[in-house]
Image (cartoon, rainbow, N blue to C red; front, side, top):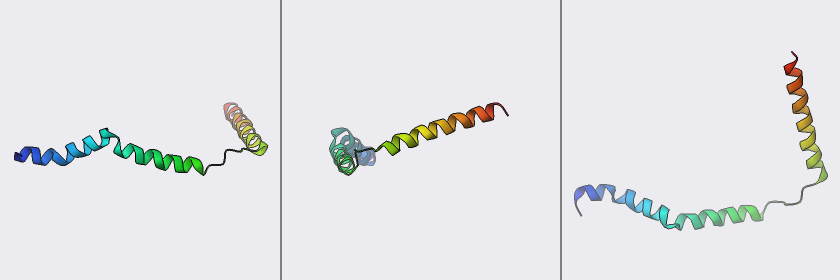
Length: 67
């Protein structure tokens, strides 16, 4: 192998590995583990909290608008 090709060989190997999908499987495995431990149940208090934050934001914007 010529000297120039040896310099770029690690970069080419890394690119081929990234494009081959080997790392992708590891990432999807980690993502599936994270999704497995999430709590899918959301209570009424979460919806109420989101609505109250939205109302407070709208009131703040209107208050700043009229300053």
